[in-house]
Length: 338
Length: 98
Image (cartoon, rainbow over all chains, first blue to last red; front, side, top):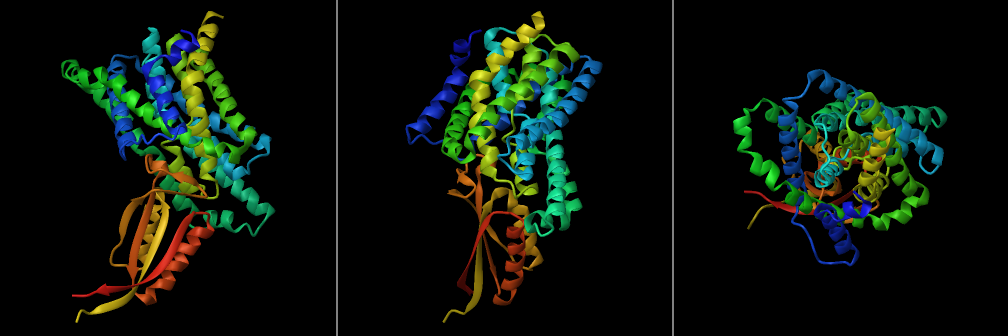
């Protein structure tokens, strides 16, 4: 499907509508908590659907997918951290916080990619769904470790770095344990894994009764969700000047790097078809805006939230929805043919 | 005539994710209770639209006796020094007792 073809999917058009509404200062407002409600529905629907498919899948392949999801989740933040430090535009603590976002995933982008593949009639494996659930958390751990390491370096070079030192010296271990607990029991992780287990163990006849809920209204809910996310993305445009051209470029380049890692893992390591490889590329390319920001806000309070939120929500999310997904599909097709 | 006791109202505007930390602090300071309301606005961390969890601020109110104010403010200043962005202000209030 062409790039234009992707843009003409209702979900993407609703994203554009939300973006436009904000740009022209429309009085369009969604009720408070609607985005949260819609994302709960989307996670439950995709979890049930994927779990139902995974119930019939091979255990060895599922295990392999989990393993490689963990590898991606640990590797991508390290790559992002190195790239960010190379730009010399952010200090190590901001780099750690931003990098954690790029190692984790965006369920919204993943679900939009599924809509794109469904629309294009491309089949895909169900294993990337379990990778989505697994990849939410490892990057948070890497982000915390990178932040701790950066603080120690700052303390070594400037012993009176009050803010940096205080976090490490004031119950640092206890805080780390608490944050690791939060990373693995995060609401979206619980909801996704729980729905997948329910979908996998439920009787097929019982699951069929749920299909109107998980299938037939799915695209409509996705449209509303992307309408809201379009408004949220446009809200960030004012912050672009503050973060600068180099970081804005990082918000576009890093997804491409992550997508290449994803394609290599999906195509060559896991042996997925074009659809499955596209989804793994999307996992590698997407940046979290639900699970990681609160964790970084608590654990790395020195980092500026407007940096990582503008990058993940204002730049990378729109880039992936409009340009990235068809591009990764195209690249996955090329690699498959090679 | 109603009996009014002079106390201090401490109001904290902070991101939603700091709620647990604030609750722990006011409990340590033996406050009898607190009130939290969701808030929208903008500041050095950008616009807080209240639409997503990451964008939600809270307005945290706690009323404490005058002698407990110093301990509470010490703890809040400790948080601010560690980089936790928040706005804290104190008002004089008179609380009705039964």
